[in-house]
Image (cartoon, rainbow, N blue to C red; front, side, top):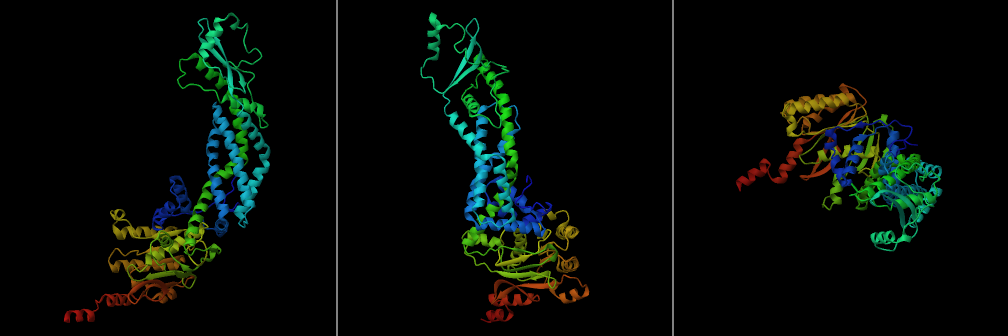
Length: 566
């Protein structure tokens, strides 16, 4: 189960389309990533994950069910969030395991502490999942994985070994060193003689040296530690080793050596140089052996769990945001997933989630919800309405619903049923700087051509005021061909525009070129001269909008005439 994922079922290829830079910008991906996390690394990871949109219904449903489990269990989320912090150590452990020449004993002891933390982490995930009512295939597979890691790695026995090592380490109080001198009494060689469970208490090491040297009985015949092994530089034998069944005694020796302090300014000091060399030579084989042991434990499941950190972080952050929205009375729902080939969509009570975020931040806004469906009778919409009537907001809302649903996230709607799109293509007004070479019409036409080169009948096309930057006749001419092409392609699409003539005579278009995807007219409304932001199926009525606005602000001919007379 080394390739286990909470986003990809094991029997599905990990294939997806990547959203274009334009689509990422038009759907405000940066805004959402910044809202989810303040950490740059997590921000970049989430942005990359959002761009890679899966399109197979099996994969999408797998994600939806995992997210639903995580969202429904706040305690599970809390426990997993805490455990994720502990899982991070695996990155450094993996890096250290490749360093076969390291001889720093404190790093070894640190690895033991990290391994102890790893055991707690795996055990914690196991216990958390066992105590939660989970239904998703993904989390049930994760429980199988941690159960396997827990049983195959002998965690209970290893946990006891580590506990004994930590306890024994605390007993080490001092180290006895043996120092060889030359004729000038300069230290030329130093070695470890013994490791002790009591500290030295008498002060004045130099005074003691002269005291012993000046007394006849103070000079021993031989060495004071004849019964001890003198570990000199380049020692080849008697070096402590460790195996998977390492004894706490050997580990205690290693832990004691960690207490040896080698000065950073030891250069030119024969005593310290030799001591450093002794310890280095002694520890190299020990470090290699222990690293192999640790790597073996981690290989059992560490890399699988390591790969889950960004996936779990993604789900947890979105679950936290969805919970905040619903707690504030903002509707979110679990999307129902249909087979991708059906190319259908149905939603009621939908809105743009960006409005939900604004309301969550305290802005006094009333969110107007709408409904929409994509089906053969109306799979392509020409959307017209007044300026600032909500056309762009609505168009973006549809793209965000598809994006969130296909990543498994709850969507901003009362109910939502959809067939996944294989990609989302957007055509919003371009930045001025990008139109210098080709001009606005040329740049827009180029991007439009690129979309139809890649799009399929399973795609979602979102066109926002496209081709409106040129004169009306030129824009309308090209726009009509674009609508005919969308009709022929059969992709789900919304083309919002001020060109009301584009939405006229659609029945004639549908009859002249029969396909399984008809074009329909969609309008945003005006109620008593006020923008209602309600969307409905109706023929375009641009002049009526103008009359309502003119009447509201008193600029009809009759109203102006009356003002002049007065």
